[in-house]
Image (cartoon, rainbow, N blue to C red; front, side, top):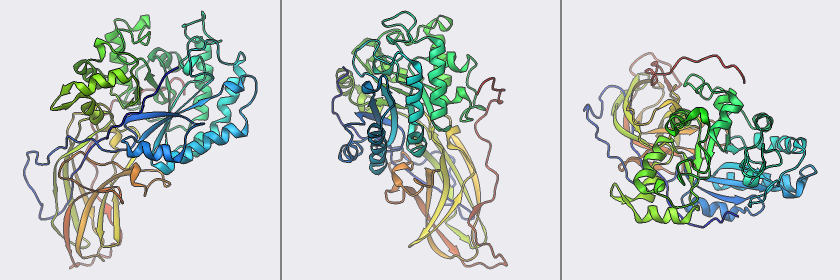
Length: 490
């Protein structure tokens, strides 16, 4: 059985700022915001911790977040249901665990299996029972769509890793038959909300289920079968093939497989855990590999000897463990910003900014991008028409936005930039908002907003009767988006 060890870290980022119109606060072209080397909490990225849904308590999950994680991996043991439906007691257990995760401010990675030990042929002999179990979880998945980050395919074989199953092609250690892979994946894609990915254990399984065509930017997040399939690796950096993770003969040498993975994980989450010490997870090798994989999240508890090696290694002035934790997933650094220090009510406010994603991965959960003005208890918001999921890492994002100010406001206002959840249930929950990685940023932990400056708005000297604060300029072009191809199967 896998043993999970309690260890703690912090997670991502600090921040900076914005804003707009006539007298700009800065005019320099060079970067002037200092990036932070700290790691602090940001949603849906970083280290994760695992717990069985049967054992999950609110106190545990609150402690997880205090210990520096925003992702929890729920594991559900279904060994008592090999020949019958999941009963209400078990379903309530799973639902309750999600409720605790929400209250603790966590997002969820989910996996169910009939054994979490090295037990072979541990799953039901009738695939219809497995498919029924998946369908029974649909209501829970949809109810918790807002905090459900990723569902690992699970169910078949020990640990739900799709080998050594009653449905394997050749018995112990061999993969589940391709037709069974497709049946289970299709059932999961139906049970899981369209905005949530389903992760399988090998890249070849994705290609077997959704076809070999690469996932293009134009298809990303579209809800197609390919865009909804992701990949997790529970033998990460253990050996050359990561215990048969990369053995598809059509994708050899392994660099060809890595090229495919690098493209696919640009748009889908890559989650993993290490399982033994090897030269492949030496600090320098690990950091390069995690960047290549666009790594989004790693298990903070396993393998303890690998984590110890990273803690003892130095990289870029800190421990390799701290560096990896800081870089997992997206990491937005504000490089430069011009904004109006003064503007007239009913007039135009212009904001110019430059930011860069310096993380291993990318933002993969849609966020609401907005400019926010606050005066005492009055808050006005202007949505920005841009999808931050398309901000490529290590490519400076230069943008210029114009906003129409309401004509009935005046005085001094604080300026904020926000990236918050698009779900109404989480929109005002700061635990699901993004903090930028700048040392001179002022993060408002109650509002989940990045304070970037102040503006003085004078009373209107015009005929405007505008009451809405809104963006009025077109957004500058996104990073180059490849043309969308036709999707053969959805």
